Image (cartoon, rainbow, N blue to C red; front, side, top):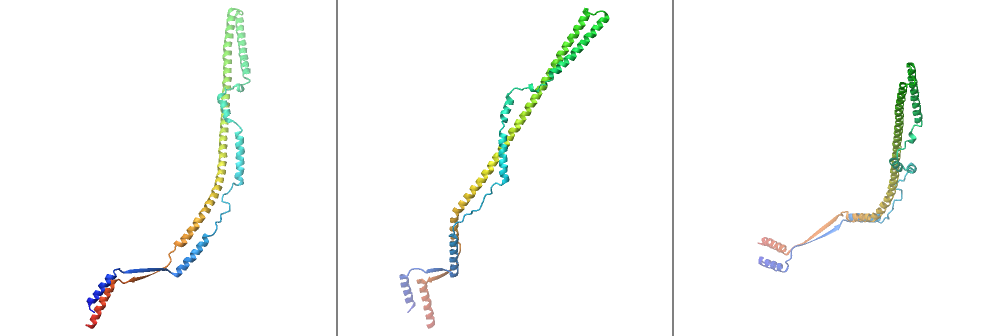
Length: 280
């Protein structure tokens, strides 16, 4: 059979088999890895199937006895402080007239009378001196004597009026100053009382904030436990998912190639040439 015959057969073969080379692959899991993989899955499934166990212990600390005693003391202080009305007292002080009667010196009139009595004694002594002088000059009872006596009485009246007025004004000013000082003092006391009420109100509000904070902490703890229970199932599912998809098992891959028609023709030609060489 010549080369032409071989080529003719190859052409006929190519005409009937025109497909190219084909390759197939097969992968298998390593048995040891597959065993570990299944064991891990079984273990994770057991953990995922465990029921949720909520925490039953205390999670929020309550108030201690000292704090509770402080709360009671603060409430008592607040109640006593609020029993007064410093705002009303301040309004009365600001709107009411200044009362100086209680601050006037009860001996003021006595002082004035004693002073006027001393001045009158001085007047009488002056008149007696003027009369003695007139007698000595032989002019007693005359116009000169009457003029001196009249002048002495006039001086007495002027001095007595000024002295009495000054004493009364001084007494009034002292009483007014005392009344103003008393008003300012009481205003300060009422202001301090009002500030004390504000402080008590702040302390009472602080107690409320602490109690509210404690209550809120308890509510938050309960809610956190509730959400932890809700998240337990998804966490278990994630555990299974990681067990299933998290590992990379050992794989064995085998491949098989199918020789194409062209390769077969090439092999046939090569074989023919080899034979021809052997037999000349």
